Length: 183
View 1: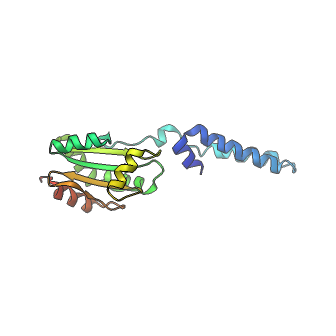
View 2: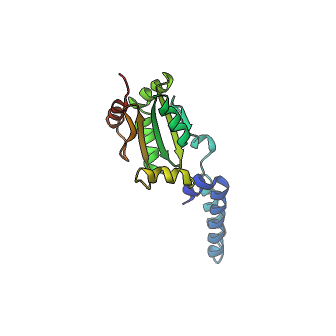
View 3: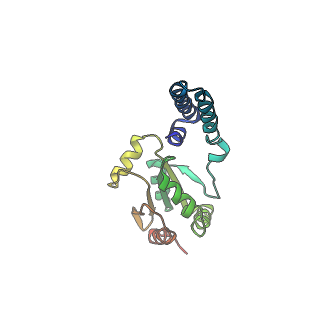
């Protein structure tokens, strides 16, 4: 709960939750002489588990993500580019696994980075960490109501190719080829 609160609301909210838990423990344990010691130790031990900003900062690994919008997607498609849309959230564990194990890993990460570098691919990230009616409408337009959600558009796939929730390298490569990626 503390991690989720820290992710969505920030470190101060998680710290306040930790303080509240410590206060409740203190109130319960004050009846015993060791209560103050236990409550204090628990509070300080909990502080050690709050992540530092440098630890939770996203790693780019050569991938250049732009902020998703319908206009950005339509504009890139009108230019004949491949478009990879990733609807994700900081609280989505599956999204984080997809990113670390597939999107930023070999062979897909370097391939996507090269396509972006060659101006053949636009990568758009729709961040649903906090509710956004535009993202909800985008998901609903594809009969989806949750994340992770990934779709690839291209000259030969104007309606988009939906990817599964658990990404695989071969799945992404096949979708890119089907969408019009030249080898």
